Length: 449
Ligand code: SF4
Image (cartoon, rainbow, N blue to C red; front, side, top):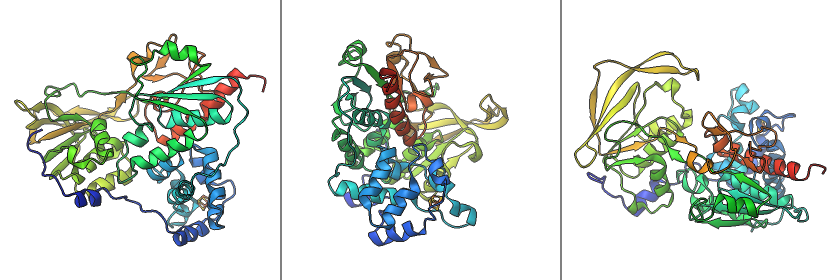
């Protein structure tokens, strides 16, 4: 890459990527837990897709029963540490806390959850659950992200042999490879993996289905197959210059940063990120923290339509990110490397079929922004090529179709969950799906129990 931002010192990188929300001390955790009103029929629990019994786990923290607290959390959610650190709590549990209606700060549920789960890992993961006797059936799970891990853990508790096949060198999916280090580090995701392995789940890492093992082989080896494959292919911009050196995909960029091998991650002095979702915000904020001098988001609609959460937007603003709203890229310019991006001003028209106002180009309004690096973050699509190898697997509107009760797909041997069935939601949704699918598999294979 040309015109790179100068490398920082090791200390500067560590400072820039230090955790945004440090853990509670024992005293502060107890004090916060004691603020909870332990509401009957608590709205925070309803707002959590995994329906953790939040008031109960908080009460156990208040009484010093941290093992019991961890058990309450993990009983509903196997991916509890990732969720504690990376969930958009402002719009889920904490957003629903009754304190908001009183004009007071909500209970810090995410940090309390982290406190209990950190304690559990620091104390060597004492056994919490009893697995059912082996039921003689096995589940093959494709993908070691949140959905796959949750499905495997729950299947193991139900007495299945569970085997995960994952293409990455380390398991954990986006928890390991796709979360900004100032929110969560790879080591945390790997602790969750270790917990799930402790239940007897086997994981084959570095195994790409379709390359190293065929889907037919997996089908023959197992009584049911769970697809926790997420979304694969990044969407293209479909504009000239997209393949120039210096144009990179946001997930590839974020993946490099998760390794914390700072010196190996190149960033341009002037960086433009195309898109305005949470991934785009992670990429632009990381670029800034790696030393880019000028960073901007280019988005064709306005702040009101931006998919990123408010707290992500505020974080980016506080890092000095500029926002170029009502702007769409039309060309990326450069001879042998990105030198500028040509954009066009947009205006908003009538709502489209999804209810979002259409972005319409303003004629003759093109202008250029000099940049050294372009990061694309305009969404992902499911891996059609891979999924087409599974007979009778129905996809609909770009996602895998499932029965919502059991998460069984149109091919009765296959179940699915996470981003491949919802188009890309939160890790907590994937965790909920994985657990639900394991019970769906049990229901279908043992209908009379
Ligand atoms: Fe506690 Fe708030 Fe949940 Fe009520 S809504 S139980 S106060 S965290």
